[in-house]
Structures are given as structure tokens and as C-alpha cells.
Image 1 (cartoon, rainbow, N blue to C red):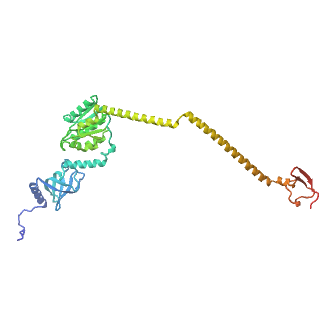
Image 2 (image 1 turned 45 degrees about the vertical axis):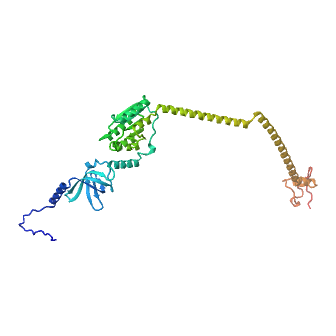
Image 3 (image 1 turned 120 degrees about the vertical axis):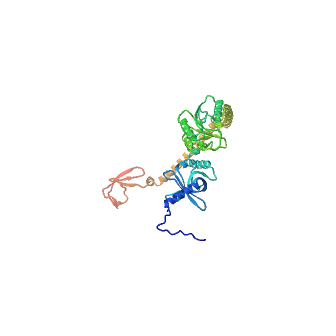
Length: 408
């Protein structure tokens, strides 16, 4: 294959030249003309949102990648949050950013592949609000019993409102119902619902509030999956019952509300039970109370009988206790006398032992004790006295005084 070569240029050559900018503009117009509308599937990477609000990311597959941008105005229509690693379908056009010669995909519409955009948005918001604690069971409040005033946030034209009013009127027609009409589907419905919840809950005129609508598709019920509605329910100072769609339908409002009713009809039945059911409940409680009281009385009678049998005849027990007291008193007196005699014997024995070593006993045997009259000291040695000293001599019976006349 022959290689083409460019002809040599000469000074007189009049062929036109293209600048880089001109070349990029030609490529840009060609791409925009030929690839004006197309769908591209790929995986998001390098996702970023600068202060301008535009969405910049790379769309790639296993072999190639292309830079992509979704301008802020188009991004506001997204019902889900794009994330790195998410596989998406992008509708737009291919263009060239002529300043740098970069090929770029300009995205107008984006949908998640494999999941509907609404389903993905539902799961993302549900996960985020759950992490914030809006679904926590401990913050949910119990519903008031037989409330005097009930608030309803719903559409005036729906069958759901007629069903709720019929049930409330049949059961307790004296209850006050305050209706806050809103649009329950379509553009702006979520803002209206949130505003209605806030106004009614802050009015101080209702004790409980029902928020809901009849059944429909996921798109029809979507207003109750919006974050603004969830936060309005969370901020409500009065308990909120969510009653959206049919029993199989679940919305974000159901998870945030204090109580979830499967249908609007069930919500009205939950707020105000039937009179017949209440009467039957009261009768059942009365019967149970009567049975419990009878059983309690029977237990008391049996306990009283057992106590009487254990107590017997009080006079006989008194006589027996008197005899027992006499016996105990006599036994105590005997023990006291025995103890006293033993003490006397021990004292006499001790006195005898003490007397055997007493100086008086020595005197009885014919001995005497000599004391100095001057200082009262006992004379134990003749050297301790002098001729002329006076002494006192103590006998077993009596004393004499004498003077020393001679010492040996």
C-alpha cells in the first residue's frame, strides 16, 4: 500500500490553511450534526459537583471512556443521586470543547440502568433518612384515644376522603374534622402536602392527623416519597397517621409517620373504633373484673379460714399460755435459787481460803505484830529500834503500848 505524501509547498502556493481553532470548530459542528441525539450506557466514575451545580463525570465501559457533563438545569430534574460505580443510561449529544479539543458527552437525561429512577431515588432517600433517625421506633408516639378533633390532609376530590368522613360520621358524628385540601399527585404536590401538614399541626386545633390518598401507581404516589413531606411529618407536634394507597403500597411517609395504616379507610377506623366494639370491650373488662374480684374474695376467705384454724379457741390458748407462764416462772425461780446457793458456797469457800492466809489467823495462834508508834511501820528487825522507842504490840485480841528498854 502506497503511502500518501503531501505535495511540497511553495511561496506562491495559494491553498487555504486551517488554524487549530478552525479545525476544532469543523469537528465540533460535524459531531453535533451527526451525533445530535443518542443514548449511551456506561458506568459513572470521577463524579463531582462544583459550586456551579453542573454535574461532571466520566462515562466508561471495560474498554473506553468519555468525559460527560450534565448542566445544572438538566440535573435539577433528576429523581436520584448519581454515584460512582452506578451504571446509567444517558441521553444527549456528543460535542467538542473546542478550547482544549476535548471530546465530551453533553447529557440531557439520565436514568439508572437495571432499576427505575423512582425506585432508586426511593431507596436512596429511605437509607439517608433512616440513618438520620427519622424512622426510629422510640420517637413514634401513641395515638390519642377517641380524639375530639381530627385533621385530614388529602385531596377533596378523592374517594379516600369520602370513605374517611363516612366512617367517622357513622361511628362518632360529634367529632370535629378539619380538612386541609391539597394536590396529592403531580408537580408541586409534595410542597402542598408538606405545607398542609405544617399548617394543620401548628394550628392547635387537632389532636391527631391523617395524611394520605387512595391507590395508584408508583408515579401517582410519588409525592409521599418526597423528602419535604417526610420532614414535615417528622416535625409535626401531633401524632400523624400515614394512609397512602393500598395495603401493598409503602412510601417514605409510612416510615416516618407515628402510625401506618394500610388504607385511608383503615386510618379512620384506627382513629375512632366502632361503638359496638368499645361496648363489647367494656363488657369483657367488666366480666373479667368480676371474675377476678370473686377469685380474690375466695382466696381471702380461704386464707381467713386457715388463720382461724391455726388460731383455734382464744380462751383455751390463753389458759395454755398462762399454765406455760406459771411453769416457766417456777422453773426460773428454782434456777435463781440454785444459782444463788452456788454463789454463797463459792463465797464461803473463798472466804475460808482468804482467812487461812490472813494475819489475824496467825495472831490467833499466839503471835503478835509490833509497830513503831512514831511512823506505824512494822518492826521486823531489832536493829530498826532504839532504846527508848515506843512500840505498839497487836495481839489477836487487843493492843498494848510499851517502851524499849533493852535490845539483844
